[in-house]
Each structure stands twice: as structure tokens, then as C-alpha cells.
Length: 175
Image 1 (cartoon, rainbow, N blue to C red):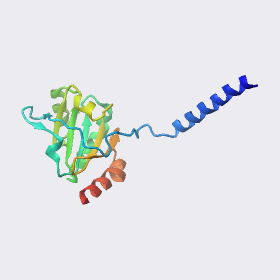
Image 2: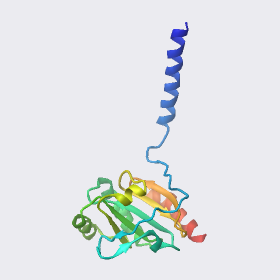
Image 3: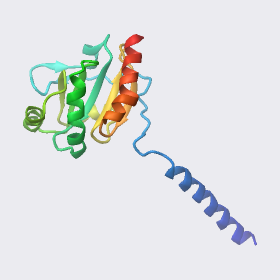
């Protein structure tokens, strides 16, 4: 009897884990950065390779860091949403051009519009690694003190802006 009971118990436990896993949203990957200072970097700008950008340059402002690449298919879906959102001037958007060729990134912005106050150029992906980026696009909300408050994985959509990002940005700007 016991030799049949243990495999049955194991199967039921495995089934329970599977059932719980199927209820999770794969786009909601928790970030260990939430509530912690934004990872430091100082790297060249995409548009001006002799100028740099760093998170401390944004101290005192609520801002977004949007990780993108010209080769990213999902970024094509997201980009027009960001261009339109940037026109509202609710928050500065800093781009992080991730593992891309400079010429390709510049051509992308020239062709599709540039929603970014400035784009950092992360050819090797080192800054992306520090931020925990495992795919593009990803967007982070950083508060006035330089603390990461939210991470959005995947393309920013009008619904994500309306229901999560804009309310959070307004709340952080009041603080």
C-alpha cells in the first residue's frame, strides 16, 4: 500500500505547484531593485558620444528609464505609445539603448521619433545587467530620491500608462 501512496502524494504535490504556477502572470517578474537606490552608472549618450548620463543627473525628479533596442520587435509596438506619452511632459524619459549599434539606434529614433530626454548607450549590456534587465523593452519608475519604485516588463501599453504608470508618477511627484 505504501509503495503506491508515496507516488500518489508526490503527483498531487506536483499538480498543486503546476496549478499555482498557471495562475501567475509571466510579465510580472518581481525586481529586487524595487525600494532600493537605482544602480549607478555613467555612460556615453547615444546622440552625443562625448557627453554622459547618470542617474544622479536626474536627482530631485521623478523619471522613467526605458530599456530599448532597434532590433527589438516588442519595442516597435511600444515606441509610438512612448512618443505620444512624452508629448504630455509628465515625466522625463531616459532611454537605455541596450546591446545595439549606435547607427541603428540613431536611425531608429530619426525614423520613429524620439521620446527620450536623452538615451544612454549600453553597447555591451553592462548597465542593463546591473538593472536586472533580461529582455527588452523594460521600463523603470525612479522617484526624486533616486529609488526604483516600479518595473514594467514588456511593452508599455496605453492601459499600462493609464492604470499604473501615470497614477504612480503623479503620486511620486506629490511626495
